[in-house]
Length: 628
Image (cartoon, rainbow, N blue to C red; front, top):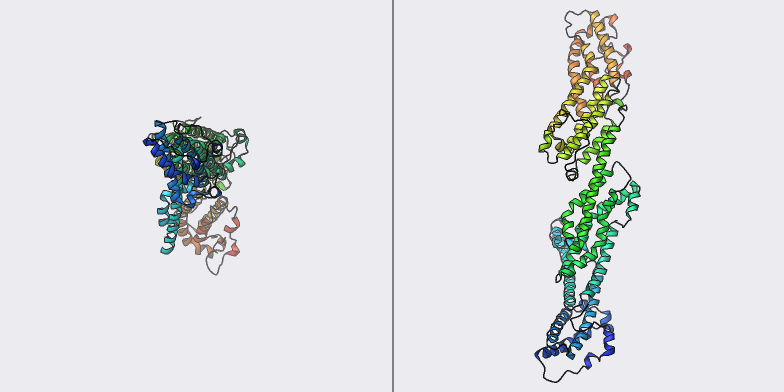
């Protein structure tokens, strides 16, 4: 780089080999111009201080930092160098052959060597103060600390902590100010290249080290493509933890520092920041694109793709701001390419999931007519998917590949017109419809019709509950929710009708003129029907407590009042009649307790509801209560 426009740069040692020592220069005696006079005066002031801090001729200057030893003198040093540079420019315009220029150039070289050394030492010895996190959060840290981090401390502790924070911040501010002073002095003196080289080497190592410590490592795309999913998933988690820190702290802090130190030159500021961050940012932003191309499939893959897409999308304003330079535009493009590839992967995974739903065997049924594993897994998948706001961007104007029209009775498509994310609503409604259609097929494989109805009621209730506890309720809408709720009620009523109507109907409704023999036959029939029904229904399960209680209460309300009335009328007569001994097996409380035992999937418990004649306490005059 050309220096000042005077002569090529030389090292101090090479200069001394060709020219006398500065102290031995004899000042010209003829009449001097104004520029000569200014230069002479400037050299007389500058020479003692510059030579004092020449690291090539003084052991003290070589091992001592000017800015740490005497900051006032350091500021004077910068001031003098700037004056010397200004005097040189004035003189070269008037007399480019002046011997004073040679002497001034030599002093300038010594001064630049000193400032190079100072610049390097300040950058190297103040890594803590210049940590990107500290730089990026310095402006708001004091207020946050005093209000929140020390909220539970005493006033004295808060004061001490605030003082310590202020000391750290003041020290960091001083370091940044010193770097800026040196950089501006070296750049204006024509030594910008040397300054930039020192800065980029040290700061790039810090950024690269930061990326590595965050767990993001450079990997060949082919290696990522073939990596086993379990291994890749760990690296994705590292990346997710790293990207926010890298963008908001590492790159942001570096941008602030770079902008501050090289505020005097837009070109140098851009060149430095680009050189420092380009490699680390490229490694960071290319990783998601490489992951999206991975050939290994996994059920949770789509969620990792969505996590990475969300991470980039959330940081997008910062990414475009941090890398707004022309020289760093490729990094924004790389981040955008990752978004595109991740979106393609999500759409592909959704289509594969739909295929997976269609392939589910309709012959596999749930034990006890409960909630099928297929329903649980599908609703877990859909409810998690619904939590990703970025899905609206990914599925924009993309419809599911419907193989069968979705009936309006299941989902009102007019809702889509007012939906904030129509494509997402359509996709998730369709996948839910495929699930329900598959459940309809499964229910046909229950031998007991009542269990088939209960199976549908249980599974639709699970779909309803899962949707209401997630964003699905907003995506699918109130109309869809109401339809599913009505379907649950309908199938629960059908179960009750098929399973319990013959028990309810076995209780005589009009027994005013009934004989003891007729009453005895009614009790026998009721006992038999109730025991058989109870035995069959002990095997079923209703996981949802609300639905379970609703069905129990509904059956009890239809059965117990009529049975209690019948029981109270004929109980004494049946106990007195020897022919009717043991006919009255259950008190109304026994029936109630038996109903309470239901719907927990406890299996066959017929022994608990069958009470032998000998177990009836004749002395008490009432049947023995059932116990589990």
